[in-house]
Image (cartoon, one colour):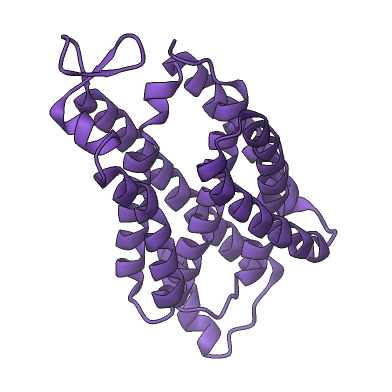
Amino acid sequence: MSNFDRNAAPWSRGYTRTGADVDQGLRAFMLGVYNNMTIGLALTGLVALGAFKLAVSDVPTATLIGSHIYLTDFGAALYLSPLRWLVMFAPLAFVLFFSFKIETMAASSARTLFFAFAAVMGLSISSILLVYTGASVSRAFFITSASFGALSLYGYTTKRSLAAMGSFLIMGLFGVIIASIVNMFVHSTAFQFGLSILTVLIFAGLTAWDTQSIKEMYLQSDGYEVATKKSINGALRLYLDFINIFMALVQLTGQRND
């Protein structure tokens, strides 16, 4: 990340920028995006696993989930009490706050907020380990990682503009959000299956589009603060693409803990 700070000063004094300067700066910028996203995903995974371990008891308790999973008091509060609604919607509140405040907050605050969001997301999605086996969750993660890497690489390297596709995908994203809210009340398995397929397709396209869009956000003249906030914002966008593909694949391919 310090590359931004070192390069900003000579450019501001009329330094003549070469193709090598641009390539080096862009690589540093995108590396910062991917590093922040990776740290965020690692935090999410660690918090999800930690919450699950604290929520599940090795000995029988008064709270039984399914046929063989017993919850501790912490698990009962996290997954069965009204607290679960707060945990479920907290990540959305973080994203909205981040979107409105990113321009005015310091770069260090933006990074801290992003990592806090990633931790809360881990708490929110930890319940998938109650529903699906660890092996199937791991399998979905590796499939997501491979697919995401290929799609992001395409978005980074393609010379074709993906702007038109992006506009179409954003419309589809709003449709998915509305349909997901509806299915929270309908609880239709068939509807959820179709929605999961659509989610994978939409966020696969968004991964490529977001990567290209983030690449185009880079400006050689940006100072450290601006470049860092752009990097965090880009990391959040790619993080959300990854998480949504992963969750949809878990629902499509995951083996239930029956």
